[in-house]
Length: 327
Ligand SMILES: [Ca+2]
Ligand SMILES: [Ca+2]
Image 1 (cartoon, rainbow, N blue to C red):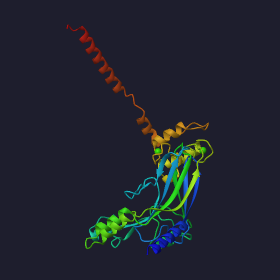
Image 2: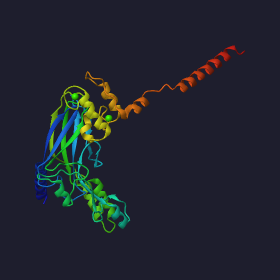
Image 3: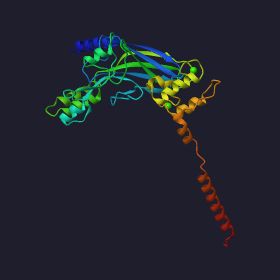
Image 4: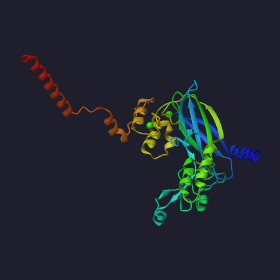
């Protein structure tokens, strides 16, 4: 029995390893691009909803091997995944407003699959031959990520610290999440099976993630803010940056303009882009940041100056009075 189980796991792991492949590249401006390719004949990952997920884990190290930054970190003790900064490929269902009104439950994501009537998230990577309209018509639309017709891969983009020399990337698959197992346990009020399932999950490694694909990329130097990779921070980059600042383009494609690496494009990045300007043309100004930049610089309001002068006069007068008063 143990032998058959081990063989079954080996076969499953082998299938997982053949279901995805990974291509790594360094884009301009300090951006790592991890292309996860679906090599299977169905969405990746497939199987029962709410239970399974896959994600990209990235470790960026300096020349001495020190870990500078991690995306998609997973804690095997708590079975918690840090979803910020990475892409999680999964499907989630939920209740529409109508279903919520009919059941008295909250609208939105749920683990009560029998009550769900809507897809609130489906970021899974489509297979070859994918057509948005056909999948939507079949009740399996993409939700929360964009895949063009015919696209059977995903490009996940990650911000690279300036001193990073090497990127280690792994695509992980997990059979079931802690959240889902706990929902099953807590939702079972009639017998022991919820608790028993939870115990089995605990005793078998909490559904430890399995590596589907992995790769390493040696990183090269770059100029932050240089979206088009011509070595200059110039008007073309400024135009691209302005789109990112306005939020009219997807955030992941704006990583090259994220000077402080906090995951967004804002006026502090705009100030850094102006400081990094190398083109002969005058550095740009960004209308959206005029107020913010003025706010960032201490304003010498005439009323403040008058108040300060008054305070100094009073202090000086007090000092003088003390000196002259008899002890
Ligand atoms: Ca450029
Ligand atoms: Ca930023």
